[in-house]
Image (tube, rainbow, N blue to C red; front, top):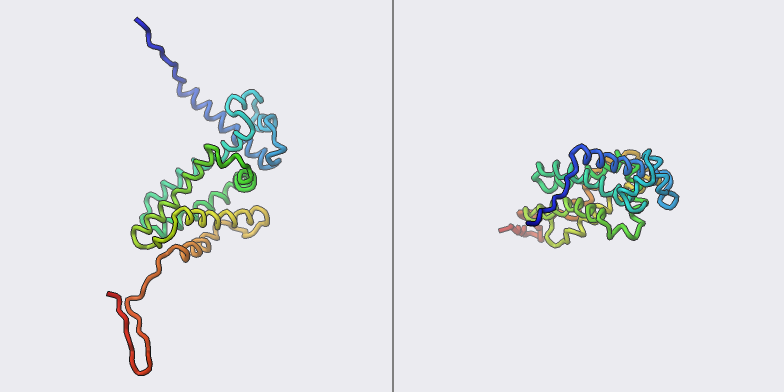
Length: 228
């Protein structure tokens, strides 16, 4: 009789230690990438920042590009969970869009080093778009798509717009302003621009409210058109 093979499970303590070590590498790498840029960063510099050996870095990541992409995956996953928890309790599509914009701006403002790496280094990497990390970023941005679709169903937003173009518009406004903030220091407070971005987005996507009646003065005769 053949014996069934059993695979040993890692103890919970060991798993926690491994996760902690991986996060330590990610945080160390973030500092190095942020200070030196991608080309000047080496695995040795990352291991030094994380106070571990080069061999230990290779136990978790295959290359410095893999580490770079993992930074994006880690931060985006964490922030996406926070946004979804908040958005879950907001039922008005307009307010949901407002909250999502605010969440993005606050996240970028409170994590300047990550923001610099994400928007100035990752965006220029041709391999990023095919990575698992990019898929996580796309999934995180789905909150914008979902909020817009809710608004269309409720008759608040226009139904002739592609939800994914709306998503790109919202992110475009946010990222353009954030890059200006990173490079030029303007505006001074990024999160305070929430309403400016929100107003521009709403003007583009909100369904026009038709007046219930329009009165036109045609010489001596007043003609009133009423909505049935």
